[in-house]
Image (cartoon, rainbow, N blue to C red):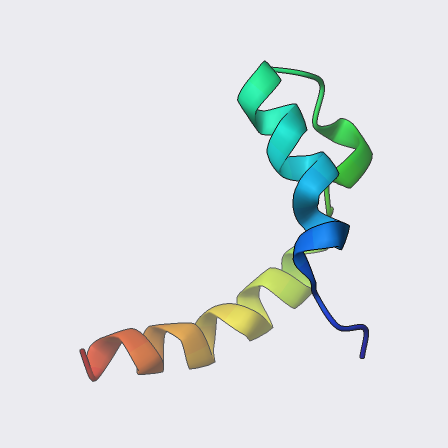
Length: 48
């Protein structure tokens, strides 16, 4: 898994700040992946 560093996210943060098009960094997930991911997230949130 790739490591996230400030150098790697700096262009994204600058694009957000300037109001630029963010579609370059957009991640599209299938409905199946979303529903599978929602279950553990909902469990984690139920503990808070």
